[in-house]
Image (cartoon, rainbow, N blue to C red; front, side, top):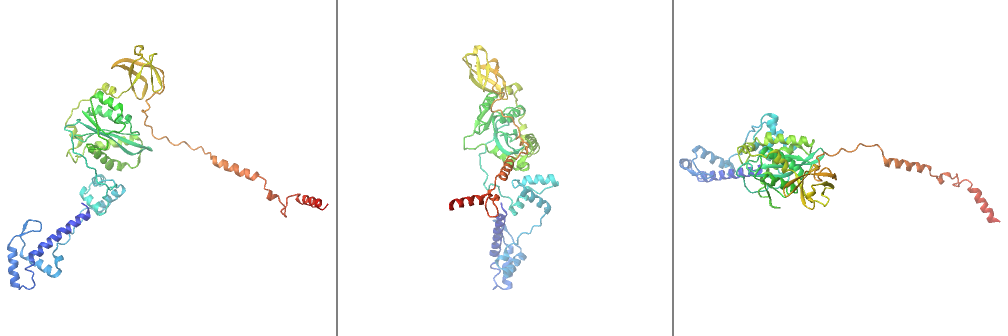
Length: 462
């Protein structure tokens, strides 16, 4: 409730009280009554119960009724309203001033986040509700976009690892390049199962986040993701099929069921990114800080929906079956189907590889690590046929396997000012050019011009 709305409600309640008091005393306050008549009416009013201004029955003492009558005689109806509440501030003004400064510094901070910062800085903080009222009075409590929060459904998985919800978040710049967070949370507990920042929103970065999560957290029965390019890539489908994970994609334009991951991303923005700023150090530092925030703050604080810390609720379902290293490695290999030529070779990403001669003319599956195209395993109808021998390597990594390199530093300046050189040459050429005007004598004639003129004049006379 805003400060203006709260003041309006208080004024309405005060008017109700004043109206009740007026209706109670209106007969006894008649100036035409004698003292004896007024006294009898006041005693009758004090002895009876009356329906109060807010529905419950009340009794009013005789001194109180006499006081209300005097107030009405001196100030009229307005004097019957209770005085405005005067509250002596109990919160240290310096703490409130620091809270307002923190809010102005980063408007995205919530009252709960600022309360945590104050406890870390000062050892004590007022409640989040006190801070919210303080921000309302200062008109600091507005949303940056001015829009109401979006409403989603209220589905919850019955047990941990029944369903993970995944998505990608566009984040700040790290070492000069934009970073993206691939994240999966457990639908039942809201615990973070996977979370990793990378420079690209692609299937390579998705695998880099999901693979260690599967090794550490176990295999979920299903994952719920959107239709982004990384989530519909064949590599994710192959990994899910090998591990027995069901992939469910949300319908385009219908985000129902994705409210939990969206709410988590909002928490990330309000509590983590608001402290990071627009640019941070390298990607490793960003991931280290994010992991520290998740494990120290998010996983240990009771969730507003479940009432339990996310990690504690997730661990209630432990232990969870985890894949073996061999199963995990197999799941995250990539594959391409190629037809073996008559000379028992296949072409793959510009390279030529020799296969078993028995496979000539057959369509085989080439299985490989996207970062190492020098080692290609050949399979036909699920049966391994050994490694393909590289005859000509076109490239050593898959085109999508881009390494996470920070933005290259700008090249060192050479000190060569090409345009300055051209300007100097132009000035020198201008100085070498003959200025015929400067060669003229006092009479404005060029040297020898008088002799030529005289000869011409003599010729005319003759």
